[in-house]
Amino acid sequence: MVGIEDQRRPGGYAVQVLAVAACYYAAARLGLLCQLSVESAVVTPIWPPTGVAVAALLILGLRCWPGITIGAFFAVMSLTAPRLSVLGTLAAQTGAPVCAALLLRRARFHTDLGRLRDGVALVFLGALTAMLISSTVGVGLLVLMDMLDAGAFWPVWLAWWVGDAMGVLLVTPLLLMLHGARWPPALARWKEATALTVVACSLVPVAVYSSISLLFLVYPLLIWAAVRFQLVGSVLCALLASVLATVAATNGVGSFVGLNRIEVMAKLQAFNGAMALTALLLSALITEQRHTRRSVEKACQELVEVLEHLTAGEPPPPPPPRPPRDDVGGADGRPRPTGPV
Image (cartoon, rainbow, N blue to C red; front, side, top):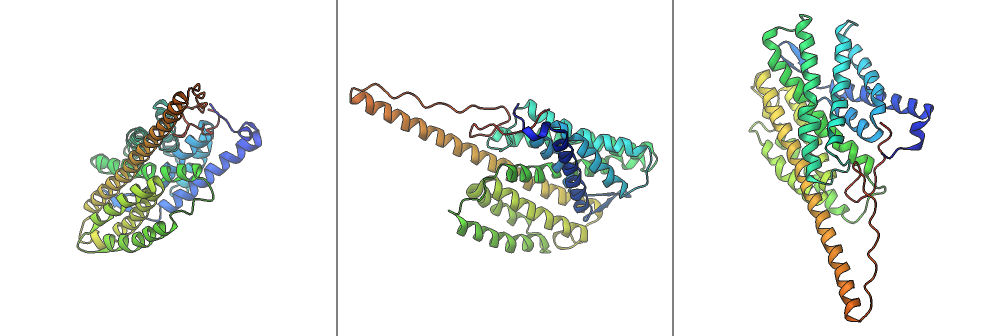
């Protein structure tokens, strides 16, 4: 396991914990800007702090979990008065991201999302499976404390679970991408990137706010972004479309006009989920294919050099040294610093 030196110092560890707590709380305040009511319970269609927590655990290591708890505490205290059920909520909000990080490490997840299996693991282990903990514990506590009717358990549970899962699917890849990005970025395709940005900023609002439901227009845009810019393009387009769709759903306008709260939540979460899956899995598949093609081209080039030496009667050159590979590294073979566990 590769660690970062200043993480082992008490001062550096405290700074990391406080930074994670601050980011979690800031993401919670952003998530609370858009709320929907489901069975007398107020839920958020996308809960960004969950994505922040999973990304922090993957990048900094499991030792930063107290920052998640601290951030969740202040986020919960900004919504409700202190009570015993808060402890259970904090345990659920901390346990779900920790479980996600453990499952992803067990699956040998690479933080650069350079393989299709990384995208599948993030979707089915980090988002859909691990987030069952927070939704089940959180809604169960509301029912046990008589703050929610037992008959409303499943609608609220589904909304809570999908909101947490969307946070992982949309926010975690973005943070992992920013962590592994090389700065400054290459300037080779700035014209196409600018064109994609202009089209996205023009097309997505029309698709979301049109009263004739043109949400399907977002998917060709996602495919373009994934094919040409892989994860960075698809995730940013998906995040833009998800934010605008969530705002439109909260206000009951555009594609969500004339629907009741349950129908609005169902349509919004179906759109966000399908869009996040398309962006994440398609970009991971394209990235993996490009890495495979580069590996094949490199192997062919080495084979040509060997044949040239053999034809000339010279001994073949020694094979180039292979870079070390880490279980939590990237597709290029370079270890990714993950911090001590």
